[in-house]
Image 1 (cartoon, rainbow, N blue to C red):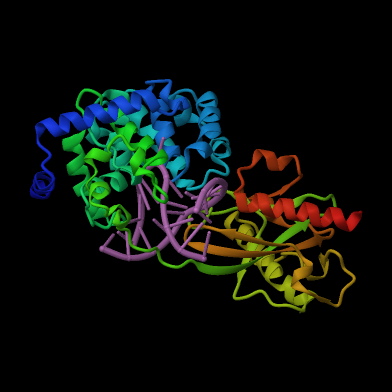
Image 2 (cartoon, rainbow, N blue to C red):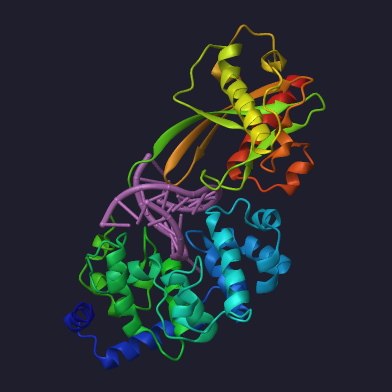
Length: 409
DNA sequence: AACTCGGGGTC
DNA sequence: GACCCAGAGTT
């Protein structure tokens, strides 16, 4: 590792003086061009931490409103450690990668127990906290505590690969260690936080992934790929695997008073801990299905769920009410149902694509023991605001609203 | 080392 | 569509 760093620096004649000049040029540029961002108006380590977690794989403009609301609602580590889980998830609703916020609360509880309620001013101790990896530990250490550690994200790897014509695959974990080694040598020990953020700003504005403008870069004299006309070759990044497609029926089940049935995804499911209409995965979405064919998956889910709940709560499972004849598709005047008659939602994740068909259903005059579990609720439109839902669920609700609205008008 | 985990912006 | 984004945890 040290050999790779030394050889790379030697190859392009980066001696002590050149490193010194590099730092000065970069930091002078930053002093003139730094982006004015909310988390740059503080040195509160907790606020820096919140911003860094939110910024993982998430664009700056998306994060800003979430960040401001989060630190306003939970202004201390103690508040985060203690807050109710549903309220916590509501603050993250729509931001994605929900394990981030769950891990952050775990870390807050670690900090209360082990670090006297304060983030430790130490890279390795930061790294020991749940949800804080090498990037985030270095970012907090450098920005909040002036510890010289390179916060190596996509921006820093891309810029560094171009500076030194490095053909390392930046999607590989082993490559990241090389970039860390190089950048820990280059980082300015007097302004480590600004050094890291300067490279991030440069990567976000000038040395962008596509259509970069290296001729405008303050580092162009240091940039081997720019000087040699090889900039288009860097960084090297392996292509991602193709997304898989999945098909679901989502049931908008209303009872006679108009409340809708919702369930909270388990920890094992995608979109874990978020509330959704009941969704059943099917092998494909067929046209021209009968009422029975459309309702069968829901019927099976309702009956098995009801009997499971009775069993788990120590009730007799023998008299689960017969509900097949209590289910009714809305509208009800068709023999067969074309699937394009109902709202269809396509939801794209980073690694898969979901095609979700919404089936509006009435469940008449039947008492099911569903609410004996905390993971299922009958909700009114108003109740939904108190539950954390995914962006997929937001889409489903908007589509069903449009659909039912048209039917009435 | 490969896979999983959201959602939105861009080209 | 494909790619990217101030990545980390799990297997």
